[in-house]
Amino acid sequence: MASGWDPERDAPADEDIASCVACGLCLPHCPTFRLTGRETASPRGRIAAMRAVAEGEAEPDGIFAAMMDECLACRACETACPSGVPFGRMVEAARAQVEPRRPAALRATRRLGLAGVFPRRRLMFALATGLGLAQTIGADRLVPRRLRRSSPRVSLDELRRPLPRSQGTGPVAALLTGCIMDVAFRPVHRATLRLLARSGYRAVVPDDPGCCGALAMHNGQPEAAREMARARIAALESADVIVVNSAGCSAHMKDWGALLADDPDWGPRAAAVAGRVRDVIELDLTGGRVTGPVAVHDACHHLNGQAVAGGAHRLLAEAGADLRHLSDGGRCCGAAGIYSVTQPEMSQALAREKAAAIVATGAPVVAVANPGCAVQIAAALADVDATVRVAHPVELLDEMD
Image: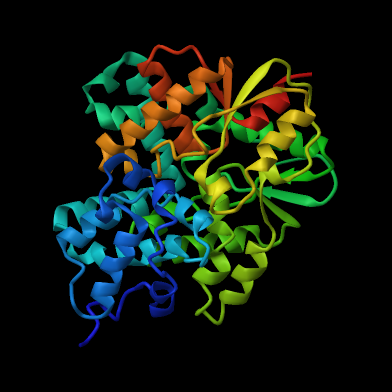
């Protein structure tokens, strides 16, 4: 029987599907299965659905789409899997198959945001300015709650202040400023640049350092992700090291070689750049002393996508922090890109668990090295009236002397 995949679009590879032996060891590590107990909300169930489509026994229809959309793509199943099943790239490819079958209006909205706005710096700044003004006067309360919860706080003062283009001496460390990070987390960028300069690098902000394409790739738009990767590669490839302070972005950029492997012109360049990408928590940084208790939330893309979560703990411990480890086993906070908007109930259930784990540490600050996690956790802590500050590890290292 012919495969149910559209041959013109990315699809889960047969060998990847076959690598799953359905042992079930992933199940207790999957946040959605743990919350629901449904096989259809587990990695094993989702791979079974992919296998049915690949063998022509099913189609990537609405039921299939719901199964894929409910996945956080946290990749905890990959870390737990003894067979090395590459579930992250499988679910991304499955979503690429689903995308053309979505309602036209929804498809257009997703395309506009992920492929139209995020890669365009001027549009991002215009939207961020509008959001910042609305937050300043309280007009953002007119926005639906799930969108408001998922929106970062925007400082109009920070938007008006340009980032320094170059500082320090030594090997060139190019900072990916990105999309959301560039408009809502400027203090993190400033702290990163200062720490890089203090640590023996020439920290630079290159031209065209915008969206890496991670959100597009995670949400069924691989061609848009490839287009963004090419633009970023051209801007970054002259640097000795490419520094990223967003866990989701660094994980995606390290896969650029695979993303463009079939492109004879860009494939080798992508692989070379991907090999020089470093999440900022992987570096040896010279910062100030960090005193007092600090809880650490490990982003999924540090724990599972890159296996570098220990970097944040190392940096903070070396700076003298009293680290407080969360008791939730590194579970996803429920942010997961646009998941908090598309799956609000599941997202908020996970956020409540994360907030409880943070509050239980008794620490007045929690270190969070991913923008989506930071927004999600801040909202969850506010829901329970917890006065816990959410800060990126580099902010803590930069501000304490």
